[in-house]
Image 1 (cartoon, helix red, strand yellow):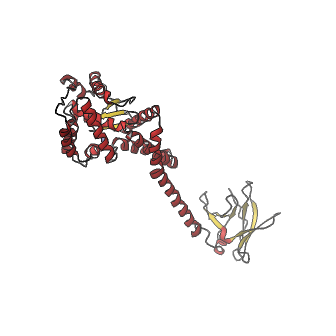
Image 2 (cartoon, helix red, strand yellow):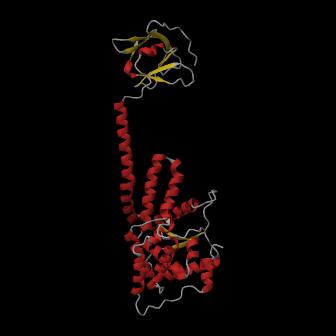
Length: 374
Ligand SMILES: [Zn+2]
């Protein structure tokens, strides 16, 4: 925009400029003076009554064109502008570049703090509470859908190539057959109507996790770290214990609910990081000690019912703990189990005298399971 210099009188406190009312694109030539009595800027235009802009409400805007135009507006009027061609008048005005008065800023901070507090309340209190209640009402089909969607996200989140390729399922046919033999062996011990599906992901992590809807997922690393099929079956049984008590559903609803709320607030920009966060939370799910103890109890009973030596559970966990230590993040799920050594002893002591384990897999079948990713 071109502003014609129409002249300013340096000795008087008056200036000329253009007044834009915000409705019309053409400005009115204005004669601007300071009305000391009214503590206001008086803006005179031909054919209009003079405008009075209180000095305390005046604010200066930067010249977006990079020039040195003096652009003033009223704090409470977002559209009207007064453009002065020189800054002499500014010397007579209060500091027009100052930020909003402190009272307002304080109020803004208070609002911001209140907003943050309510987000925290939603994320850390309401969502978990609602999730726990929702978990009891979500239908089986909904759980399956939640589990399937989460599994896809986890597979993508685990990708280390940076190509966004989801981590592959291991599906060597003989390996799958051996895995199905394990599943079928444990299945009679499941509650009526409880579906269990099992997958192996081609990833070196020594871990296993469960997702809503009865998805039990092993990593290749865990299958290879096991020394007997009974050890894999024992972990399987433990994970089924989590499924049966619906721990993953509650967990996923809590995380997804919180992430949903955060996503609404911070937009899709945060989405990728949040999905990764969700994936990590689910894989390294650290359920409450009671939940772990309950899953162990369930596993021991299930293994005994299906004639698999329940000691395999403790033996495997204990070997992992000795190999990797307590603190290893990905092992936290297994090694943080309450009083593991006590449980190993208890598992062995609990065995009835007439307990005779039935073989689980033949040696070739076990070989096939260990190479399911090849
Ligand atoms: Zn567990």
